[in-house]
Length: 468
Image (cartoon, rainbow, N blue to C red):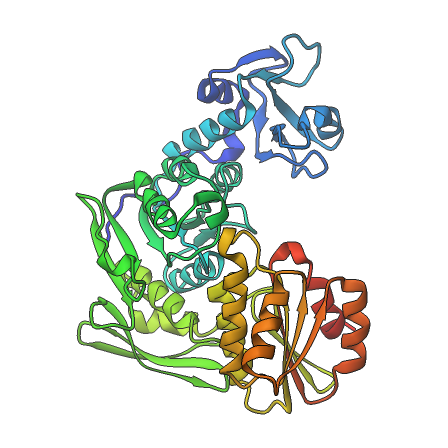
């Protein structure tokens, strides 16, 4: 079992002053009082929670320095700047060399004042669902803080950490990665006691070049793993099953194979919902999840493993986990007008696309199973072949109709036509034409899966059917 010191925080963000921001960043106060108290950090000038430090990030298209005035109008108490040298203002302006680097320094400074343990979650697919399920299992024994929304980047993680309060006893932090070196940066800020790697897929292969490069980058989560920490690895993943934690840390494998310390036995679906026996040593705990798809068995197993290593009995953690029903746009199921709508539009990769299709195929009471699939983005030079593979997968499963949106998704349609000509296929390049077709086509008794990358904006299309 993992052991840690006292819980909580010596001084919450509500007590951080401009003077401490200066100390953390090495910045220079241009005007205002160094005794100004700050309660939150914001990078959005339109939204302030009260007494915020506004951090203007310079992006590829927009330099937020132009919105500092708006931030103050909306309640900011202070602002960083890398573009001003002299100001005449009542409110503090803090000059730094680079605002993003300064934000990271503030996050690291604040983390050093926290004594609660953090669990870091990374992986190619399933980070957010795993984060939510781990937090759910841990809530059986602790007050849990978790990453809000998708704040898992070099900018999001420092803000996430700054919102941890004295009431929180353990945190579950999602650590994302889209470019080389990014995970190292945020892992060192988070300084985690436990690390989870869900899998090694092909998401972001466009930026990283190969699956092997993705694997190497994901392992850099250990750059922020404390001495004596635990690395939880998916023992069913071909690359992770032969991986071990860095020296001084423990490795725990979870999955369905005999190589796994925490293992799921007798896995089966009951009307799409996974049921299995969770095994650890001599313990055997029956589990039935309230989220669909057998891929969630692995998410559940690592959640039970983390909870168990934190001293929570598996049966107690399993009881909490069985109450988890997922969240918006991630395999959410709605029953409207005699139809079953599966909204899985938050994002898409080959692995998650197949998982969604498995859920669709598991709905036994459907008169027709219809897959509405849009492009999967950031898959690099093999993008077309990955889409074609999805079509081949569909051909072997009980799907009655495939509707595609986008050029890449057209490869899914092509494969289905070639391998399963009995399946009805309709292709669209624009939402404006897709929506009228679906409104005319879908009827009572249908089960419909909506799945695609977030940038394809399939979510509003799905919502039109379960919110109408």
